[in-house]
Image (cartoon, rainbow, N blue to C red; front, side):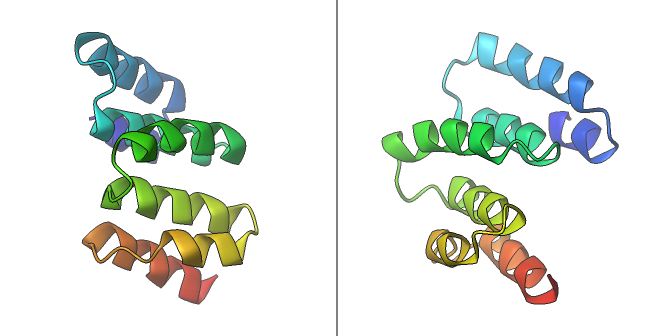
Length: 103
């Protein structure tokens, strides 16, 4: 629900929803990745990376976190770092790589 709100441009509402989830389940990786997405859409790439670093510290193989990190790096103009993050084999990584191809 938070990601959908974010995609509709309702970033503040998305953060509220995701922060509510995190209040109930602190450190919940999918919610943290969603929170990072709310940073990416407003070009706060450093903020997104800080959140994703927490997820990846607990699970370096989290494919959703790696895909979001790759997307964040790509949008920040850090293509080399994006390619490095997008080594995971997942639907999310495939989508991020497809975006990189057209960017």
